[in-house]
Length: 280
Image 1 (cartoon, rainbow, N blue to C red):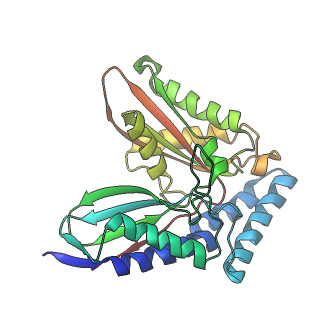
Image 2 (image 1 turned 45 degrees about the vertical axis):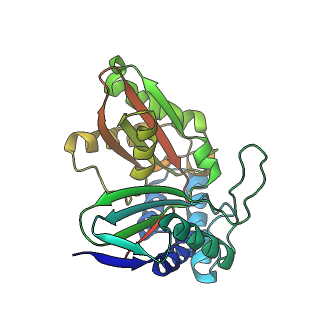
């Protein structure tokens, strides 16, 4: 049955998600921090992890951003094919929600013209990823992305002969070469397959999973665990001070690709793994 959703409602939801994501770190990440404290051999590493937990508490209770970098606005939308948007344009509604959220939440606005470097002033336009799904509901996932971790992300076109070992090596080397720059402990999103641009979107979307949420394919889940173990043997540690906790988790997503290609993307996420969602 066809259902109407007003842009006014969409604006309100996006506005609230912007603020919620920047103020309130997910329970899964907080749990992972606390678990890492128990396992971390480095005294400095344990102290850093405790400070990250305390930082999250202050942000939540005092209603301030987790980090001074409140991220570029990345929005994933799953829209039911039986939904009809009323009252205006969907893209503009998303941008208006971001505009309101970043202004009223006192969040740093980081969007700028890539050539002139002039700030757009309201953190718009949002990076919007749309997917049509069955049904008459709309899921909105807001995932602000900081510049430090994004700058350490990469896409490469490996040769098919590189195989799974080549993929693993590429990911681990990317983390090693990034060092402390992406503010570890990181979360690593990996996209393999599709095309050049599609692998990057897969990697970005992988970061929306909760810590500990393994790929349902047992073979892919095994690869995730193996890569995570290799990364945590690098010794980079929390915030680069050394230790066993360089990454909290690794998420791998794959799609079929051209027989002559092997696109691989690594999207790094800092310890402030921010994403919130709502269903309308």
